[in-house]
Image 1: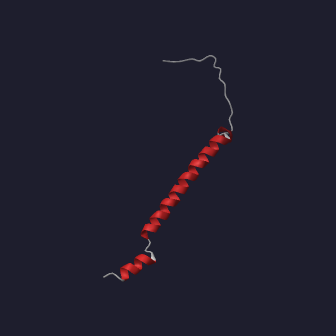
Image 2: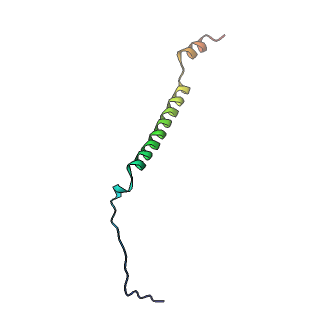
Length: 65
């Protein structure tokens, strides 16, 4: 089936990709990213702390009865 379009009208808008985010939306994105980064850092610190042998534990292990 052949389609013949004689005349077409369209509206094209040019948008700068950088202008799509309002300052408020950008701040929300940054806040969320910073929150996730902080949580990951705290998780890593907790993980390292659970693997570390403190002097108190080492002393207890050396002097077990």
